[in-house]
Length: 327
Image (cartoon, rainbow, N blue to C red; front, side, top):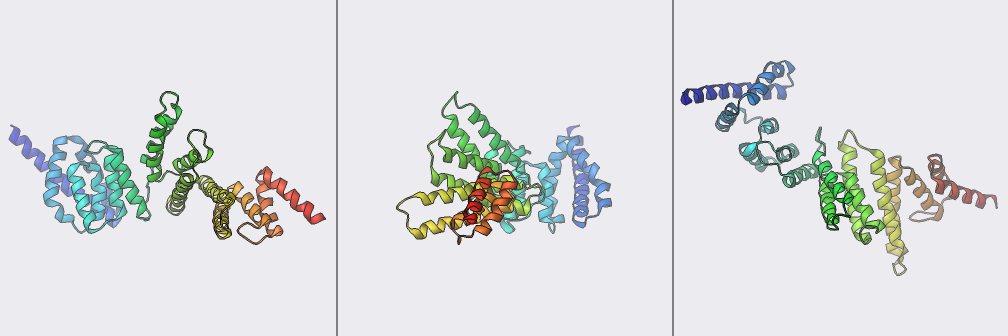
């Protein structure tokens, strides 16, 4: 009886393989009719019986050469099955062709626990590799980064219970930033800037802001839900950190000018993202000739934009400039 059941599972697995190959071929050919004709059968076959799925994986391991001319697309679709066989198959493909979607697939397997134990550290590792490939990844949501950030925020909310929660929070904020979470990077930069919960450390703050700024550039290019104002805040904060380094009395003038130039570049980027303080800081730099030749008329343009957006400091500086022009 068991043997007959096993044969039945094998037959169903082979049938599922045929349908799966047809589904992949339809996806590659962008033939919606072919996709629709087998999609439901594939899904039903996967979900219907674990024994069928196990047999499918065995058969697939032996028969996947039938579709070896479609390795990338096949591996991405194959992710839905998860498990060690899938991981081995994808890693073999990575040795030949290390493309970002393959790393993304590995991240998904470990993030969702698809056929393996859920492992957020490994998910983070593979998502970060995928992000670092600088390739457009349609639908790449930083879900794992958000989970890390939520964990970090939970630890931050419970600092009174255990002071060690701060170290844990920083660890998870760092993991979130590694996976591309801009808000986590801003939080880290702020933590090491304001000195309220941890001793201030400009070097660490700049390091976090710089990493976050790089991620913001990637997000602007590849993420459909790119948040301009959050990214603008990143560049504004980084610009402020560069500017503040110039207060050191023993700093050589050349080094100061270099910091001013980097600050101005950040403020201009911030303003290009419609962040209101970015407009103000660009105007300030022109008004006082920091990192650029002093130009009150150019300063006025930027400050007027900031003033309209509600930046009080911009309104006050505009008034000073107008008073100078009246004399």
